[in-house]
Length: 228
Image 1 (cartoon, rainbow, N blue to C red):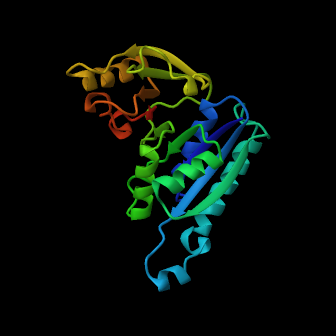
Image 2 (cartoon, helix red, strand yellow; image 1 turned 120 degrees about the horizontal axis):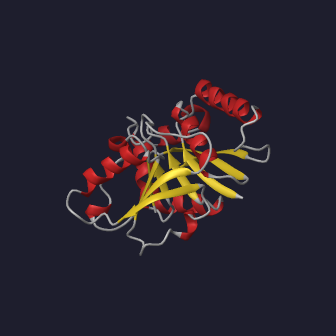
């Protein structure tokens, strides 16, 4: 079973992340929706700290209902054995989030675009911690220009991995259409041209390395970017 974590504020784009997960993984999957709250320093803040106060119940109900309809509509990629869990975390730090990733044995994080651009500091802090973790992180754009609903996802691999597909993403439903070393001047433009010309749906890039290998935000490409 694959375990995928989706940080959420229960905006509509959380469902886009769930649908992306169903396109990526063809086996039984456990999706963990993670919401989080910073712990305040004052006694008053601590006294009134609760999960109910932090989650929009209307948005949550809408998302859960949409998931239920999606799973029950006979989608080929989603079986009845797929699980959806929710976890609300009080406190956001590298150590706390690392323990969450370990507890749920997370293989992949998929981040909806509303979280990094949220006006709430807690959301931006959570995304920053997740990006700095050892777990592969996929960023979704606001507008998905290319997204298939079936078949392997057409992927551009920006090497930096010794020419090898990382083992922890090898089991995903990917079609590596092209592979290149992103170390030359003008490589960003080349990536943009390849995305358009080859109908690329996903770019995989090294998570750590020189700035030349990690300068492609998902919104500028209009497709998902997976950093591993």
